[in-house]
Length: 111
Image (cartoon, rainbow, N blue to C red; front, side, top):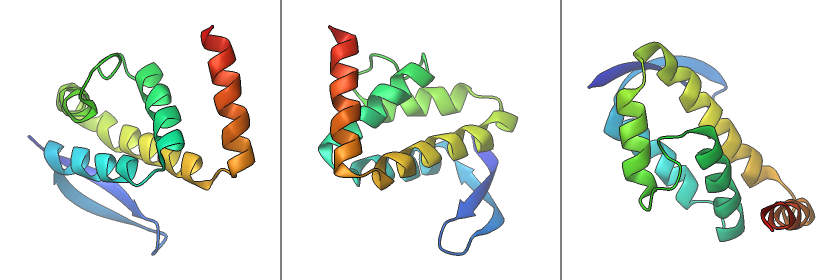
């Protein structure tokens, strides 16, 4: 499946129409996830599993994302892509102290 996706180029701060396949969308998301340090990646994946029931509790994030994006209505894809990438950027931009606090809060809520 090929989807029309509006991609925000962070460096250029401009909107550009792109036609991306599900695999390309998932590649972009997983590359951004892989760029996070392990603690931020863990917390992002916790958020992603809470955000999408199709990604929740999968052992392979790529497979879960692929199934989710493939099943998604085309009109939702651009919004979800922006939401996911914004969340990744949010985790990347947090200070070490903030990440420490958020992880502790998360672990307390799990027990």
